[in-house]
Image (cartoon, rainbow, N blue to C red; front, top):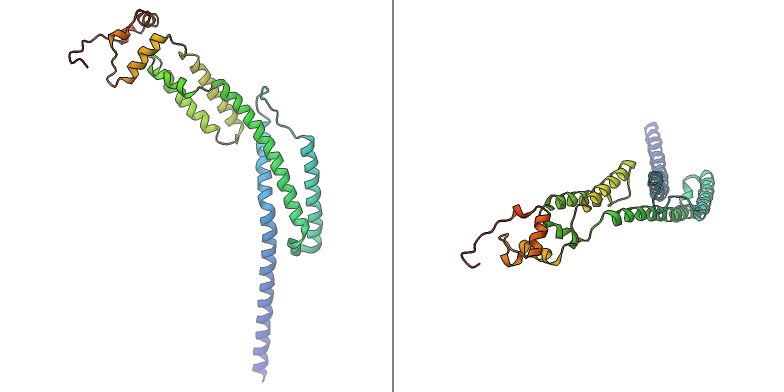
Length: 251
């Protein structure tokens, strides 16, 4: 009889432990859901605040100064109040607060703030980078035209290299002050290289280089060497780059 009572007692203890374990798992799950619903807006806010601090270091001539508008300040107050109300309910209800409206209200309020705050950061960044692009950028057809102009091949390649670095830096909002400095540096390099390029060529000179570029043999008919082309090449000290060769195959 004693053995049976002991077995019954042990079984009861196991059932109690199983019940407590189930309750603990439920509580942990509820806490996890609360954490999950607030973590995403919290992470976004943290990232936005870091970007905000970085964009405060943009040059003084940036088109848009990063700032917190009055409307955004009002949204901060609304979000803070929503979080305060939820925290009070959480302290009262503990894990059961996952099912209350105050949690959803806090999440939505933070989401609204993040959206408005993030848009202001994007607008500031885009305005500044567009200003840089307008100063250092080139239309593709103008850039490609430089390949056919003797003496500018290296300038073309250097510009392409800086352009690639510049575009890579534009892929995301600057993650550090160094990224801002690098963008400015690449922009200055590209502007300097643009100053060495030739965009307004005389029509006959342009036609001469166009035929030279399009011919896979790197040759051009002597008829294209007009007096204007000759004088232009002479002025640019480029005549030594060309030789006269008789076309015996009438190619």
